[in-house]
Figure 1 (cartoon, rainbow, N blue to C red):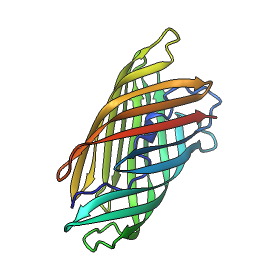
Figure 2 (cartoon, rainbow, N blue to C red):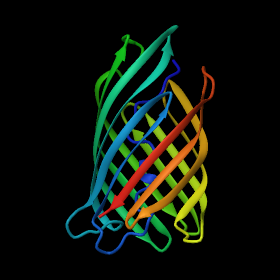
Figure 3 (cartoon, one colour):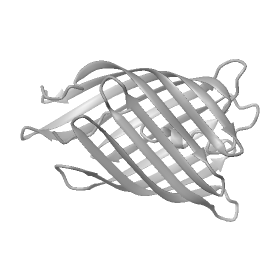
Length: 231
């Protein structure tokens, strides 16, 4: 049953803390979206708990996403629309080497299919336990990673980005990105290029594009945009 996974904010955390967080920063807000075989939009925030700071100690992350995707099942073309929300407790760590987050919490997703597909176990409203890690190492050359797993449904997303800092102001990273996502019924890979740059103090934007590949269909292009701001 070739299809796309409804998911929360794929690749969002690749922006978080990618610019240096100052000692007084308490959190980060983010938003963005992607388009390819369907689309998704997302937004959320990470807020440090009292006594902690952005990049150090405990925080709460809340996020929401929604979108549309298409797939073929038993010879029929199915359109899916979904809304999803997630709340997680986050452990943050950072230093001269970079930063990393580790989180876990509940996720709820409501998926509507047209026409209804009895073979799709993700249809309807489902609760899941989500675990996630994201972070970055390096300055001149930076490696970002992101991984998320839905423990009950077995949905997963992994992604890495790697590239050098370029330009006379050294505020931009260019490079390659790749990832794999799926569940028990399919696996989808993607490969592309990205550019991430500081748009203003405490604010970073990113654009990426490339192609996805999945058994049962031809490779398809994608484009993604993201924006984050620390506070």
